[in-house]
Image 1 (cartoon, helix red, strand yellow):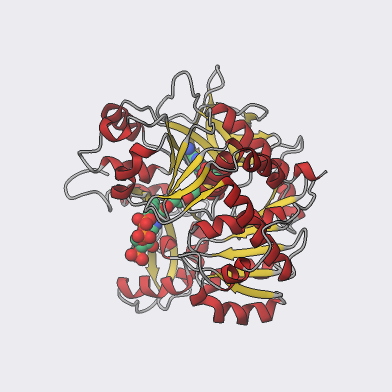
Image 2 (cartoon, protein in one colour):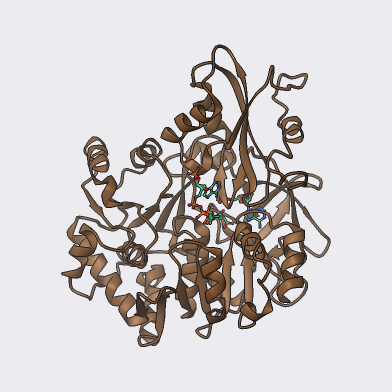
Length: 503
Ligand code: MCA
Ligand code: AMP
């Protein structure tokens, strides 16, 4: 059974390539071979084990991106425990919901948050709180350094949980998507084959590692294939451009590509060593795709996925990468549209998650009777199987690749003094694709806009907070009384447009 632990599959690659570089930080600070990676993961696994973590336990992680964070991710998997990564932008209020729901054995946080986490841990019967900072130091790292560098990988079956990733799905409160070892292995190995990732590749990694894209799509494909990772703690267009010549492969959200293009000197001299640029997590504008190709000669490969499903479709490696489409269902994955086209895409396959954590009812609602997961994305499927996303049946905003659920923001906005009701929408934003704004009605005296924004930031992660709040006499409603968000989007579509132009 142990071979189904995804770490055991990585381990074989790590052993085969023990001397080869696995991860190298772009600033030249750190370089680990695959052998170092295996020994580091074992030390962290021994430390976690000493802290009481056992197979099946949840481990909640909210730390800045660092190579030590990668060792921690691997260690949790090696132990057969369940990794729960959280966006570093989440506030204490948001964080406490996730901890109460997941009931982890251990919390790992930034040292600056140790005290507040400790108080939460006491309330939630969490066994221990340890820390790790942006430089990879902290109480967990100190402990790991003293540990043995061997640790036997714990057995896991394909159906055992490897991750618990929170997402709001199509509606409602955040839910933990239960991701299994089998889900992760099937998806990563399919992508390695499809995108032809090998030990000869160098993957430029500048995505956060608390979401599926940077964590599972990027890290898992590199670890399964023996590719080298060129590591950035965050995306910075200038620094990435300066290092692109050392890489062959890059994965990014559309904002990465528009930011690279905003430097007018960005062109073929820096991309000539590159084999493949991949985009996902949000729609890549056809014009970005065309401009990138015109400037560099590279057709960005756009793919589409979800937290609950991993990757679902991809444009082909060979053959046309058509701008504005997300390509074909991955091998082994079936998709269809419910009812007539366009319709909501439904998906089935070994990539589809096991269900929402402790929410059997909600899980049932999000699957069809014949076992297809309902994505909430409105799509067309052409006769040759090519999928295009044309809309969303779910009320969701995607800003710079981060998902924002308007209802969550509206609930907080409605509590502000003087706010009658609110509607939160996404409108075109030149940098983030969609930018969050709110329309509110007044039921009494209102604080100035900047003050309301500052108040919201105390409970909501900054990226979720509306960048503008507009006062209206009444929200537009249809005959049924439902707020007409499309009407509001039309009214405010040029809010972020550069002066005199369109977004
Ligand atoms: C930062 N800010 C944002 C965003 N990011 N506002 C809206 N949307 C955002 N995405 C705000 C901050 O709160 C701050 O605001 C100001 O912008 C500057 O923050 P900073 O941290 O300096 O921003 P940045 O480093 O330039 O970050 C932008 C970014 C980042 C690089 C685009 O958001 C990013 O790495 N996004 C990738 C997200 C991702 O990995 N998504 C994958 C999800 P203030 O000044 O007011 O405080 S996985 C997924 O969706 C599925 C499965 C899939 O298919 O992949
Ligand atoms: P998440 O909840 O973070 O898993 O985000 C999943 C959602 O991101 C999907 O349901 C889509 O709406 C969106 N998404 C991911 N990739 C793409 C893409 N290439 N084009 C358009 N939307 C995408």
